[in-house]
Image (cartoon, rainbow over all chains, first blue to last red; front, top):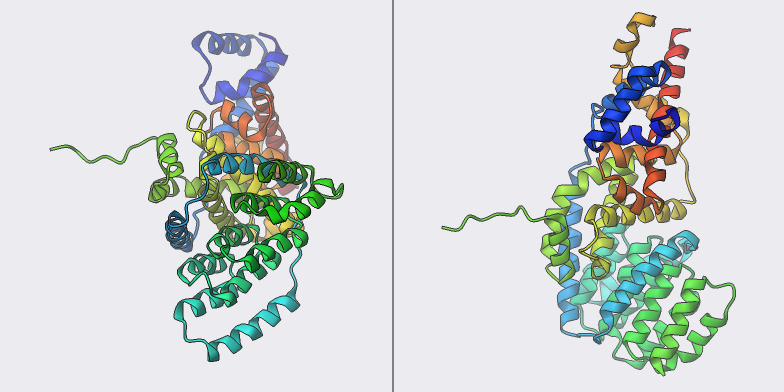
Amino acid sequence: MTCEEIESRMAEYWSKSLDKERESAIEAHLATCETCRAEEQRLGSLWRDLARLPAPEPGPGVRARFYETLEAYRDGAAAEMKHPSSGWRKTAWVWQMAAGVALALTGVAAGYSFHASQAANAEVAQLRGEVGNMRQLVALSLLQQQSASERLRGVSWTYRVEPSDTEVLAALLTAVNHDPNVNVRLAAVDALRPFAATRTTRDAVIQLLQGQTAPIVQVALIDLLVDLKETEAAQELRKVASDSSTDVGVRQRAQWALERLQ
Amino acid sequence: MKAVTVSTTDNALMAQVSAGELPKLAVLFERHHRALFRYFVSLNRDRELSEDLVQDVFFRMLRYRASYDPAKAFTAWMYGIARRASLDRARDRRAEVIGIEAITERRGEPASTAPGPEERAAKMQNLGLLERALSLLPADKREILALSRFQEMKYEDIAAVLECEVGAVKVRVYRAVRALEQIYFALEKEKAS
């Protein structure tokens, strides 16, 4: 074994993942090469010390937030069971994940408008006086919270309101357009599904495609439109597919959607 | 009487989550959230951000559960998601970077003794100094050390996460340790002067 080969084998030697033969070859080299032996001693010592560094512990809130998110997601999944989607959905998810991977590198984060948030806050304050619907109030107020995990809870609460609730629908549409957290935007796209029985909602979803700049959310919206078999979306999808300023993964997805909707 | 056991493999559990048994994700959370948190802290040195990122990872695991392939290592899939979540968050925060001074001030000065050749081995025990050296290492090197040393992932799985060849991972681990050693001794020398 040469000094150069040591460089490519040393990590495995330290982590004891080499077979006996290779391990012996390294030890034989170290026994005869003083330079490599000295380096191995210094670096090996550091490698062992790395395992002794204390691991930072997350705060207790992390666990609570996880179980809350899981609970919320179960509620959402249960609601979706009542509105089963078409059989190719699974493939859509697979593609979406693959697209997410590609898009994550090229995506553009959506902007966040404080003015929109303030206006929405005023609307919610007004709503409190007018509407007695507890679930609606919970969903709407959670959607206005500072913390992204609270807003995710708000999205999950929307599954518990009547799909005819236009205030909640408006809040979800605002979340898709303006929420600074991409996970909230994605969850809000999913939560639009139960509302999508009406023509107004479907048109609104088509409109969302125009305003959205985050590729991962654009793909989720395109998938929703295909899932809804929304043929009216063809014109907008064609625009997306031919817009050279749009992410290439999104354009391909729009083209795919057009073929599905024909 | 049949014994009740929960010792199912990660891959099997995630396959069950993927098939709709969402509560099984709780077992995976309990197994992996601390390691994930450590991975994120290694990357960004920010506890609060790292806690948010842990949430992001498990949310995405739910959202993209159907994309999970049980034939592939669960940890590689999970850290792939973790890596993208971190990149997305960095973009959302307009790639906010914490200055090195801020990190070192927060961590405080490690205990020190006068250096000498015979004391070199003892100095290596100085974990505070080692931690500081680690925080000064470039992010890509910190990441590969976090995956290989703290998470003890297989080199094949690290290659899948980082989307590179296995051979390249092994060399990069070695070079990261060498870079760490250079910073470590530079810090030691600085303290002596």
